[in-house]
Amino acid sequence: MTIEIIKAIEAILSKGDRAEVIPTKDGPKVVRIKRDPVKI
Image (cartoon, rainbow, N blue to C red; front, top):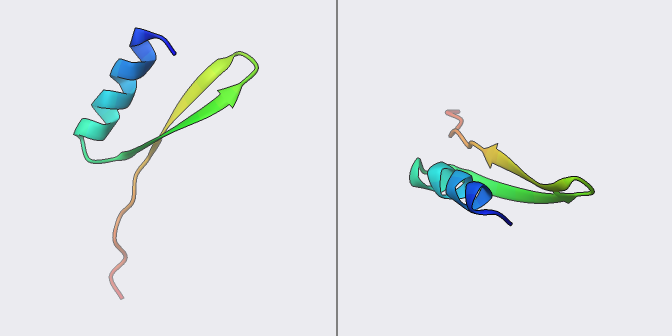
């Protein structure tokens, strides 16, 4: 992982979202996962 990927992950986590790192043949892919509560 490069410094750019680590900074992107830290930026996602600082906003309270979840970060997922997916290995691909072109290198790691970073995905932001945002969860919103559902009111019933």
